Length: 99
Length: 357
Image 1: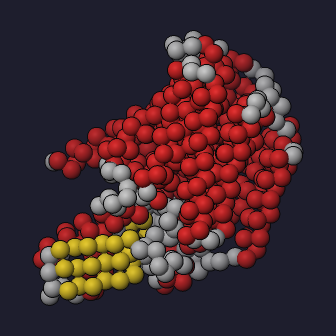
Image 2: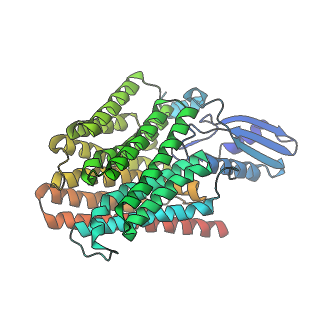
Image 3: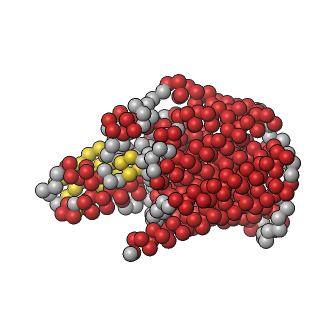
């Protein structure tokens, strides 16, 4: 059985290169559903104008498969609702950006 | 994963090649203007330097970047049209044909930008749309018979507003500042007024924008990171210094076509500011557009250093009215762009070798 936390940990290896911060701490990961044999992740980008989204989706999928080879099917969806806002960042990310 | 309405990455390559054809011929045209002997299809292309660089190259790569973000097939018509427009200029087709295709490219970019704005109503998406509208306005004025010199503020506005919108978006990682937002709106108003009425106001707004960016951009913090993140930040911050210089020169001397200050201001803006952004973001945008890895290497700093040094030579030539310096600086500018392209290709090859080993 794969835990939600294990998936979240795997996703911490996916870095937004511009921000120098992982997508979990940036608050870009909205939902993790770790059912047996099928992991589903909903993630977003800070804006639909950003072309990096599909690439980070690919990296997120690869990171989960690499860290959790028994995860089974891995689906990562890019979603836009609700819109990202800075309040979604972790305390660690906020500190990094001077909050 | 490619969304069902998107086009696969291999089909994006021809669009990028179209853009780079405009870049290469556009740079050749620039060198011709500086007195260098360059094997171009026609000597008349010297007059197309600005249109090829701003519309054929930047219009196409920005359109492509926006299309990838939107993941909609119709959005790719923008870079296809502007890339084809650049190609028509290069091929010596009737000017109006190239101009019309470039105008269509900017219509599609504006449509895509409005689409983004409607999805996310925010000051930064409005700024991106204003950038696209500025490009379209410049293209329509040019199509309508206005000279390239007269539409330069609109084309410069296109690139400046697009970059400003993107940087404003990323500044949301920082603690919110109502004052910074108000200042940004004032800068936008200044840029718009300056584009329409008065070059000096445009220069003052560019200078103000550079100060805003130096203060509000996340680069101030990410420059303390390492690797690619720091490299991007160094590109950004050094670009903002050129933006300040360009703004200062335009504020002091206006935009008198053909003058030395005109050469200095436009190249500080387009090469120093805009290309620094390109150098910094290529390792992120190329992988996003083409799905090829461009792994960071410290050698990335070499083309950036050459870009800055070559601009110093060029602007020193402008300042001292030394044609040889200006000309040599221009050749070194071209060399910096070539070094950037070769460096990017080498990084892609390195990435592939690392993957297979």
